Length: 157
Ligand code: FES
Figure 1 (cartoon, protein in one colour):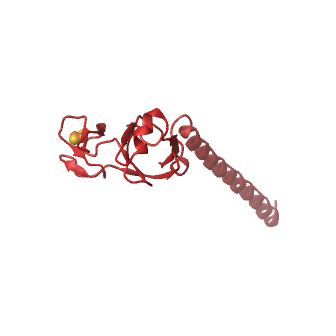
Figure 2: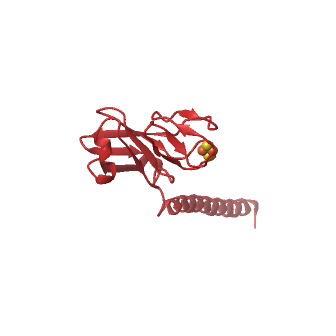
Figure 3: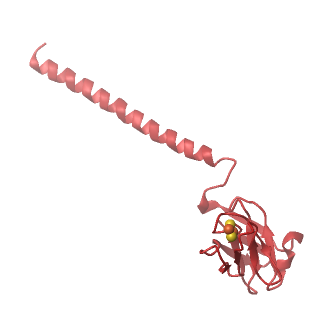
C-alpha cells in the first residue's frame, strides 16, 4: 500500500466513524424526547397547554355566579391539592393553589370570615387575595391566571 492509498483508506474509515457517531447522537436525542413525552402521559399535560374549563352554572361552582362567592376544586392537572376559587368582581374569578406555603398541607375552603385556614393545625391562614393572614407561612398562595366569559371559567396552569 502506497502513501496515497493509505491516506485514502484512512479518510474513508474516519468519515464512516464520524457518520455512525452522528447517527447515534441523533438517535440518543430522539430517545430522550420520547422519554419526556412518555413521562407526561397519564399525568399532567405540559404547562403551556394545561388548562381547566368549567361552567359556573354547574352545581359545584354555582356560588361563583355571585360576587364574593367561593368554591373549591379538588385535585386536578393544574394542582394536585386542588384550587380555591373566589368571584372577586363581575368580570373576574381568582384561583389559588390549596397548597400551603408553610409545609404543603392542604388549605381548607374559605370560611365565612374570608379566610382559608390550613388543615395542618399549625395556625396558618390566607385571605381572599391569597395573602398570608396568619403565620407560620411567610409566602402567599400560588395564584393562577383565569378568564371568565359568560358562565365559562378557564383556569390556566
Ligand atoms: S403547613 Fe400550613 S401552616 Fe403549616
